[in-house]
Image (cartoon, rainbow, N blue to C red; front, top):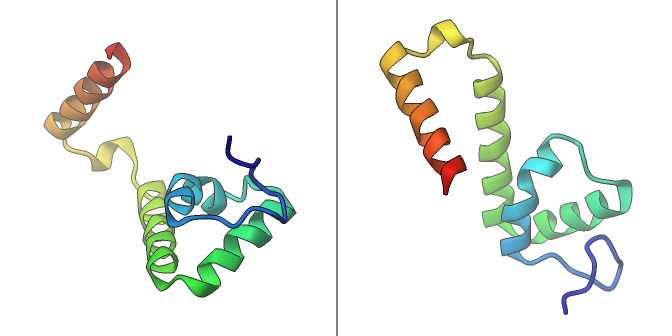
Length: 87
């Protein structure tokens, strides 16, 4: 059984960083978990780049309004979401 997140005995893997990147970017981690996450980023250029890309994507998406998305694209996105929810 994996150790709980956010303990000093636990070092994040790249896979865990990918899973937790949004939580980190949104500031939803506790201080100890954030420290461990950032420790991994200090030694992993690939994960640091990935988190930077998530941060940039979140910032760009946050500036979009419904009127910025063409109606046909919006409908395809909604249908993809509905399909995902059904499965």
